[in-house]
Length: 165
Image 1 (cartoon, rainbow, N blue to C red):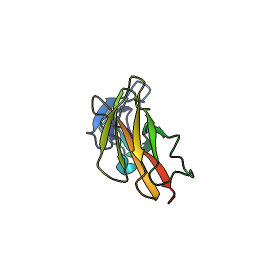
Image 2 (cartoon, rainbow, N blue to C red):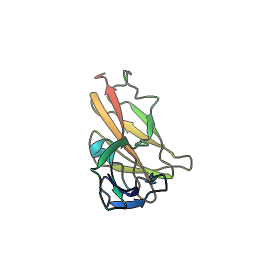
Image 3 (cartoon, rainbow, N blue to C red):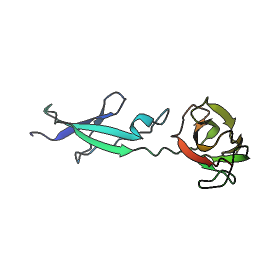
């Protein structure tokens, strides 16, 4: 390639391409912050595409870099509904949600793929939700945390086993 590198053209998945000026040593740095909702479709994997352009206007083939965005899924716990536990139909207990996403104001959750429900987070980023086991065998709780700006974490999946009793 003739000529010194002048600029890098970058493209982060789902975002418009942008041009970044290269430094005197031919390198460039970008800062990128994920916005909006965690990308569940790709499990948080994100792709960065980079091309270089010389002062003469020659552009290289793209290079691709993949990285995974931390889902910052909330932690979910229960003293009653533990995996391999002995809870039976009719047992009532609480789940505690603890945010990992900074600025969390609420949790969005659902049991067994049912309608989503919302519970407010306290100042420590926690919330408690009660649940009664209505049927035996496997159940699933899915929880996400959300900020006031609408940024949503990745999901936390909590499996619940209920004995027939």
